[in-house]
Image 1 (tube, rainbow, N blue to C red):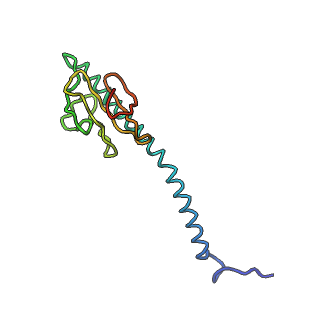
Image 2: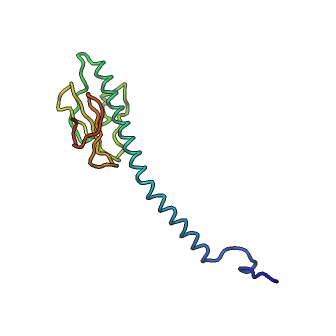
Image 3: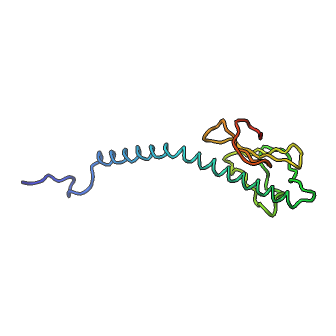
Length: 145
């Protein structure tokens, strides 16, 4: 009994077999990419929280160094702090700015005894993570409590 061989010399795959394999790989890749979207948002939120905690720590260190004790008086702005002038030297340089993924909002109202930095979270977009001289937390309003 002779076995029928594919192709000229019995090696290789048919076009249909290749197309099926490519389609299955594409389907699996799209499922994995969709599933990873939530993990990426959580990772970006965690990075933002870490950035804000670093800024708050540098603010506290700077507060202790200033006589009389005061936080750096920075202008209220749509981004936390620009890296020009580095007002948190030598404790934090460069200052985390969100890397274009998000905006860190800064507010101190001209008061050198308070500060607040916050950003809108990606996983739960109605929440804002904030750090201030009182601590850190999550708020449903775009401001510090």
